[in-house]
Each structure stands twice: as C-alpha cells, then as structure tokens.
Amino acid sequence: MARRGLSQTQAGPARVPGGRKRQGEYVVRLGVSLEPDLLALLDSWVKARNSPSRSDALRALIRKELAEHELGDPDSDSVASVLLIYRHDAPNVLRRLTAVEHRWGEHVRSSSHVHLEGGSCMQLIGLVGRRSEVVNAAEDLRGVKGIAFGRYSLGTPAVAGGKTGHRHPHAS
Image 1 (cartoon, rainbow, N blue to C red):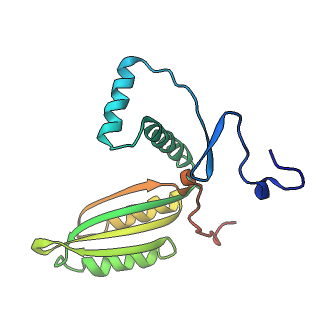
Image 2 (image 1 turned 90 degrees about the vertical axis):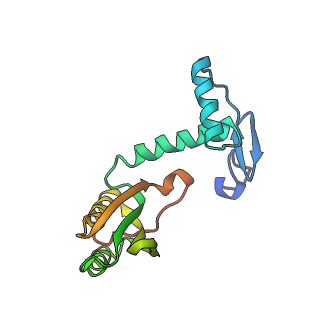
C-alpha cells in the first residue's frame, strides 16, 4: 500500500501481511507440505548445491521454472553463453569464427579466447537478444567448420528483475 500522497514507487515496495524486510526487500513466509521422500531428496539437493537453506534452494527451483516458461516465447528477452573448443591450427577456423561473430555482432556482448594445452583453444561468447535470434546465433557459432565441440546455455535476466538492454530496431 502506498503512503498517503506518494506513489507506489516513491513509497517503496508494498508491504504484504506477514511479510518481513530482508536485504531491502520484503519476503513472505509460507508453509509447504512435502512427502518425506521428496523432502529427503530436497535436503540432499540443498546440500549438494551448497545452498544456505531450503528456502534459497526453492527460490532457485522456482526461478529455473519461471525462466523456462519465459524462454518458451521465441520473442522473450534472453541471454546465452556459448562454449566452443577447437584446434587453433585447424585451417581457417579463426577466420570463419570471426566472420560468424561479426554476422551476429549486434547480439555478441563478449568473446573471450582461452589458450589450452596441446594446440587447443576455447572461445566463450556472451549473446543477448530475442530467444529465437540468440539460439540461431549460438547454432551458427557452434556449426563453424573446425569447431570440435560446441554447446550453449540459455537464460533470461527477467528472473532477476533485469533486461538485456538489447534493442530491436529491425522489429516491425
């Protein structure tokens, strides 16, 4: 509820009955009923991922599901990390990879080259944009002739209350 004479933004976050302030935000306690076997699996997962609490682990699971739901929309705001491994002495691999990075230049936010032992290299590329465009860029990058291994991971900054800042001037 906003205080008299102030908008919601000026008044700060809305207070929820039973909520308490934590790190500048209000959180609400709720009860969850789980079967003993499911609780044991949750506790095992909490320990394995080194979560500070069940609540933290449940928040992570909820955010993961919300991200997957959001990313079901091909126009959703998304990010991707692309991992490529190749031999630096493979014919023209660097020229081809650079050409593809430039083709998707408006989506490429970072590219980092890592020298490995034995003549191998790793390229880490950060992409932003619409999910459909980001996936196409990631597939294009990992399909470069000479890439021995390519994988990408998608996410959305929406689960953390953010945006990529990517503009779509090509949209109609």
